[in-house]
Length: 427
Image (cartoon, rainbow, N blue to C red):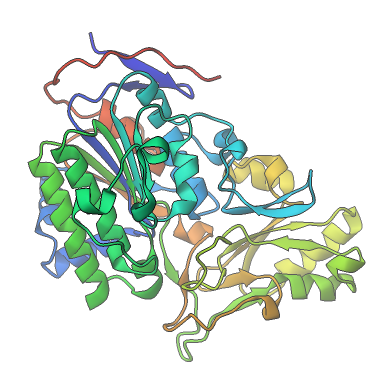
């Protein structure tokens, strides 16, 4: 009888052959469809035509990188794992901080659980901001970022001389090559029998700059197609999903970013600044890599302690063109499955073609060499779930965090050598 491991209330079957789950950052379904239509992705075309399984799935809110990656590897929404953005306001210390420290995690990952049960686990992420979160609790595994592959060592990352081992040069963090490094590393790790369960997470540099069907986007997805075919040829079960989609966030006539500067608006509505006891606007999209989006996304949270001030802000912001909705803390936590203590008193979501900022002078948009494309709102929740085997969905509403369950539990394949595993549970 096949051994299963229980993680966060879900049972997962041990890998019966090398199993790869890919988080394709910023991959709205239109990218795959456009590449297939252009004839540059024959392997994906075959999967869509019935040789594999394709489902439309949903990501989690806010539709940013960290919350969704952690949902995928824990099999849970942010209300369980606790990562509600890339960036948050720590009310205990009064500091605005990046959520890249494992101390913020409230649930174990299934990668950690499988590694502790003896499965060979490997994690390759494009940017280093995710590495510590994704690798937390992983025992005797491999976990490194393409961004700092030249610094990988056995003690911390489970691998050394990575550039030589993978035969790839170090890629620029703002490039398509950074994601290609992730895929090349994944193929090499399977070939070298260094991974039985593999998680690959890319960067959305291309998607922030290029819409589906453009030559640049199609070239990028042609590259993806080649690596998916290579993993398939190696006998892997491969499941591909995304952390979020991507939308144009600019005026279609002028190409200028469409931005609501919430801190400026809140200061105006309340008649006082944060320093004078006003509201604090937090943009959870914020991370160390803002050149391609200027820290502008479609989700923001506001801390304002006074009930009358909250009401005034809620009414005033909701009436602003480009705002989709303004929710109170408890309503937002319930609807979006968020940890209530890690969001503000108000949550603001913008319409599809609009973004939210803090104060205009705090955003450097000089790096936007093409019209702004970004994410974060409910309009970027739609993502693909593509599997290189024919399988059935266990329920009607699929989420991106069902990817491991689908790859491990819903695909019928002949088992390979037995892997000893112990049961790991988390309440």
